[in-house]
Image (cartoon, rainbow, N blue to C red; front, side, top):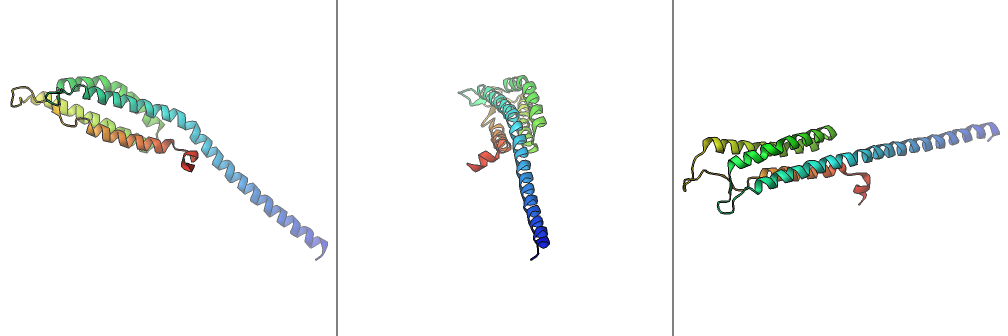
Length: 172
């Protein structure tokens, strides 16, 4: 093999190795940038998700505190009042969740708010109908009155955890 051909082959091999090295560096940089961006979003999202979750649990607990031990029912008027007091804060936090996203977390938060709205509507209907029970007292809201809220919160927590997960979490 003459020296000219050896030089051309050497330069070709060197170029190929350099190109491969540049490509691998580019891929690693791209992965690192994506990871850094996800980490930068994580803390603000975690705070917003946590605030929404806490406010929802407080609203749910406030409704449960209305359930009378004797009848296992909550007076609809009080349920309606409590929820109307809680709605402005919940709506504000829902807007924050909507803006931070991702959509799957936002959708789960809307399921929770729909459950609260449904409970509010049930209270309004019970107030409007006002039918007395067998003992002559107005019928209250009984059963697992916040069960749909709790189911929605379970979905919200699951979606939030997935959204906050990073590559480091997946390695565990």
